[in-house]
Length: 195
Image (cartoon, rainbow, N blue to C red; front, top):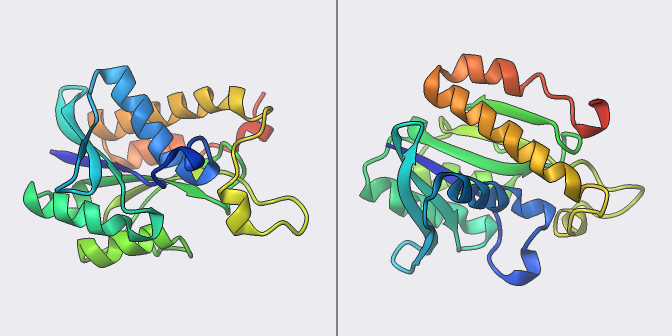
C-alpha cells in the first residue's frame, strides 16, 4: 500500500491558498476515484482508503498544520507499516513557477517546514515528492504571506489543468516506475510557458 499525503493547513481561512495545493490535489484524487475522506481524530488527519489504478492507497490530509505535518503522517505510516519510499507527498514549491512540477526522491527540505517535519517523523527523506510550483511573490511581498494567499482569478482556471497533470504523473508512477514518471513531470515548465 502507498500513503498519498497532501500538505496544507486545516480551516476555511486556508482553503484554496497556495500553501494548500497538496490538500487540493488529495481532494481532487478522492473525488475522481470515489474515495471518501473522513476526519480521524486518532490520526489528527483526514484519511481515506481505496484503490488507484488497481493498487491500494491511503489518502491523507494532516490536520496538525503544515509545520507539524509529520506528526500525523508518522503515526499513520507506523500503524499501517508503510515504508518511507512508499509515501508520496504533494506540496507547494515557491522556487518553481506557477504550474511547473518536479518529482523527486531523497532530497532535502529546501526550506519547506512541512517537508522537514515529515523527515523528522518518518525517520528519513526517501519518500517521493511532487513539488508543485506556486511561483514567487511579486515585488517585495513576503513569501510567508504570499503562500497563504488565495490563487488569483487568472490562476483559478489553470488549477484544473495542473491537477490533471499531477494525476497523469502519479498514474505513471503507479503503472510504470519513478524514472518514467519523472521524465514526464520534470519536463513541465509552468502554465506561463505553455501554449
